[in-house]
Image (cartoon, rainbow, N blue to C red; front, side, top):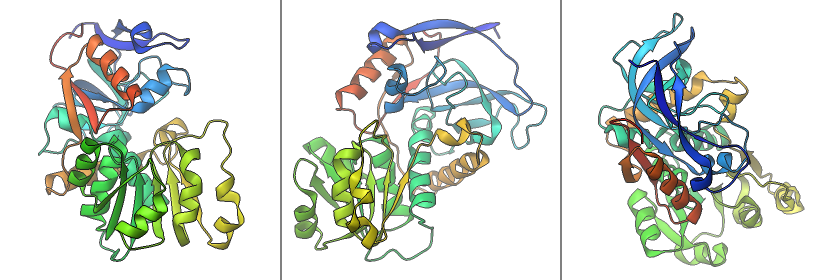
Length: 346
């Protein structure tokens, strides 16, 4: 192996993807005691990559938080992995990301790749699946095997990566009766239904009348926000019934969320949870849970309960990553965009 490898970084200071992303040479490092050195076979982008590039979230200048690859070296304290293992995982904010040919990662965050998925399809899973799983399981308290018949979940922005896998989990793993997903275009509505939505409503219209007329219920039990938290918090509080649970994966910035503090939310004993999936590793809190969750998610894929999230895939190159950032920022992306890492990055 060469003493250096290629990676894609962003230049500090903000700017467009075309202005800031560039290919660099990185010195190869040996794994620390708890690390794996992975030869990346595929990686993927997420909306958080564009936010980090713009300076909204502090992170290493090499971004990328999804990868699938082959273990090339293991640290002295690593258990459960060996050279040659096929793995998949989510990266971390404080270390170089997965937009690279090789990558060092804490083994606690890693799981063996689903055998049924290609490299590209596996790379599209980790960040969004962990986000959805943590919000549904840790935030909403959902458990496999429990009876959720008669329950209703609303998922805002079902066409994105998190919304897509959350819909699948709600339908095929937790088996919630009513899975109401918002979409606004024919292609996103079709995608939501393919993922398992029982009902699709438009986020361009008031949600409550649509839910009442299409689903036949006036209240939901769970409300998952995957786009514009301030815009949907009032609807979430209004639609949730007593004891309802609200969660969001999108930061509110400096905007206030008065609805969750209002008397209606108090009287109904509503709960609210933020879900920032990269936070566990950032604070070194409960890190091993994410590797454990990915192990269970791999089993679900291999059991045929979950399907691929990747709707676009390209060879890994500077141009393909730039175009993926632009696609994400346009708001038109559906599912996940992933890359095969087969040769030198150009």
